[in-house]
Image (cartoon, rainbow, N blue to C red):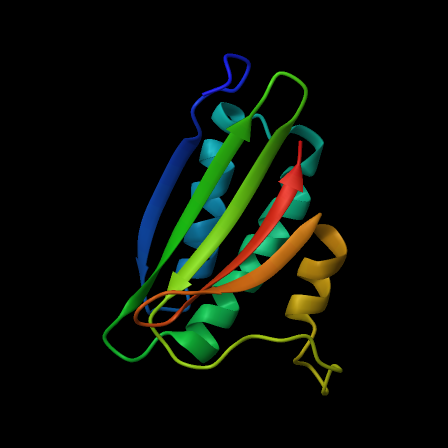
Length: 134
């Protein structure tokens, strides 16, 4: 390992399939914010967590299941990057689309506010993620 690279810092929490867990996920991030050093990116991170958690609840978490929220901080001598991951066990694959009435804006917001975003595979389900340069 490069001596200027610190080991990644990981904080995570499991949330049940309940609407109120979106606000609980935001509070989890807010409580970890000082330790992670989110600074001026906190509001962007909180909004993206809300959108990814809501998408997991509405589209990705089967009844009786939940989702895992992970915050992974990678720090080097010259940069720090936070990766937010929401793991769910549902099918389908999130994608950008034209807003339809009151829905369809979540991933547009994530794409606009984060420095990178995407969807990865897991068995079962998927991982929706976004990253922020800090």
